[in-house]
Length: 327
Image (cartoon, rainbow, N blue to C red; front, side, top):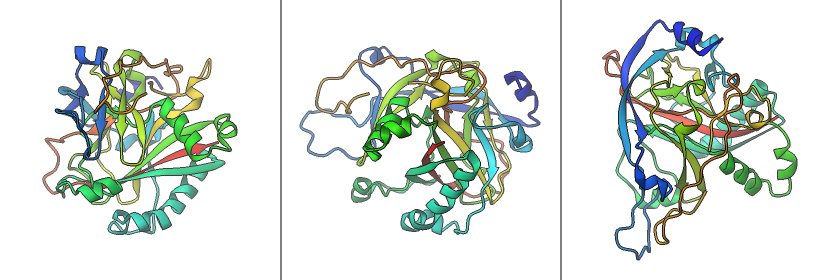
């Protein structure tokens, strides 16, 4: 199915705004970065937690919840699926319970879904529309609640994925990296209907190489690298208007099959410690990781304000896990 045929399937669309990375001269000499915790012991005056500057662009967002069978992580880069869980919404906000019970359920689900030989879940994030005040101790433990993510991005760069595999499996990394490696996010709402700040996803086939810029992302436990996205009027945006209790969104952040010669797997694109004290490092241009136009790799996504959403709704609460799937 072509990208135009996919767009023609939508029976509902709405106008919204997506916040993209600005095309600044700054990024020709300084790599975009963000620090997610409060910096301490920084002697340099004027140290910043981020140099990321965003701009809002109007877009059309189409609903795909009525045609879920036509979407997949291999084609568009995302899909809507059913994944029942034994945990209650309150339990899904408890990190200890999530790690002891939900991880097992998610591992079994991803193993069935993708024929996985191994699944490694490496991150859990809980988000609420009404973001609480910063708690420094919680930030340093990486246990904080976050507000909805409002910038268009891809969570993982290919280099960051490979570094995580080598860090987590130092004795097995060479063997594991010879397999197909995918990073899949499982996102689920914790209240229904999920109309406040819903998640929007961009069909990766509507993106091009120049849309992406490498960005450093420093947390208390990991120095990662993500992809920030520039505006492109060709981008096609989707969201799930009707999600029920067992629905989850699967969002692909990386797929090693997409970088093979002649690949037909969907993928996206694009390293340094955050520049708080040392001089800025010029950004590196990412290698081309778009594969062919048939199979999805990494999915640009963010939340958006659904201005004509039904009035009967609760403030958004959601949780997501990030997993590396080896197959």
